[in-house]
Image (cartoon, rainbow, N blue to C red):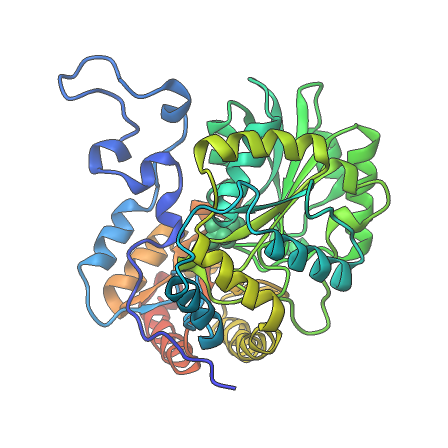
Amino acid sequence: MPIASNDRPFASDDEPRRIGAAGAGSASAAAGAGTNAADGPSRVAERVQAVPGSGIRRFFDIIASMDQVISLGVGEPDFVTPWPISEAGIRAIEQGRTHYTSNLGLLELREAIAADLERRYGIEWDPREELLITTGVSEGLDLAARAIINPGDEVIVADPSYAAHAPAVVLAGGTPVPVTTNAAQNFELDPSAVEAAITPRTKALLIAYPSNPTGAVLDRRTLEALADVVKRHDLLVISDEIYDRLVYGGATHTPIAALPGMQERTITLGGFSKSHAMTGWRVAWAAAPSDLFGGMLKIHQYAMMSAPTVAQYAALEAVRAGEEYVISMREEYDRRRQLMWRGFNKLGLACAEPRGAFYAFPSVAQTGYDDETFAEQLLLQEQVAVVPGSAFGAAGAGHVRACYATSYDDIEEALNRIQRFLYQSPMAK
Ligand SMILES: Cc1ncc(COP(=O)(O)O)c(C=O)c1O
């Protein structure tokens, strides 16, 4: 079946740009909104100021000014949305389906998602009272955080983790508490380290496996141990499972909500952006026990009203008939994954096997560069873009994130360029 690849240069709105609320704004916003135009006290709310600006802004400014960059930086599929899915969106426009939907989203779509989750994972969510269609997992994350966090509540997050996770907690008035993961343990979250981070203020655990940026997947045993900790301390879980369909080499994805006693304390977020190459449609779903769902719905109906209608019709086609595309894109990602992580190891950049998502997270510590310098020099000298690991948390330092949702040929060429770059690095001297 045809899956078209989107031959695009580095996308200017790559998600690491959004680290912190200031990341997407102007240069003065990036400074953390310290002062207003008249140099008086900041007019920006304190909790927004508390979100750090992007540490890699300069790096992205450089990319924007360059041609011929091979981008392993952007975290989105290079495929365009499979045509039948796009056609369903076009049909919706032709048929005049251009109005709001119910706040919850199209019932047909919620029912289709509920049936799909039951078939794949054996979890039953009530499409009328526990499933909400959101404007991307990005919105679901914000709703989940705002629905459960009281001022000063602590939320445990893995370090490194997706750039928007800790900011979502801060913007909701909470305090993210990072728990370090490391390459020696394939960046898997250690349940005993989570338990050690729990305080009387801990409200929830925010997890996202398969992981952006590390490609880590948690096996069922580790999830069960995490679930035990969560239940013992009566915590909630926000589980961002946007990469659930992208696991490789015999790895399987288990939703934490599927474990005994966990559904009633878990908000699960899932979507279409990565699995169906639908990042621009802005459509996803959130599933939560009815009390938490009620809180999330309240925010959603005032802040968003409903997810984009045309995108919901496209998503309906994705759930009903998108499986073959998911499988063929996953097969192609797997081919690229093998090339990339083995390639890094051959070059001496130690890289744990990424078992999910579409990222490799090699160490660059042995090159003599820190991760930011490595990324910047690689870009300037060889026009290959990767993201410094420290953009995803302090524990990401010494690594870079490379995305393999780009063509096989480009990955091959990028590896050649990286090899040439390493000959010039302090490591070679
Ligand atoms: C872990 C994770 N969650 C959420 C998102 C955002 O997803 P969406 O496009 O559905 O808003 C991303 C995008 O990169 C991601 O990597």
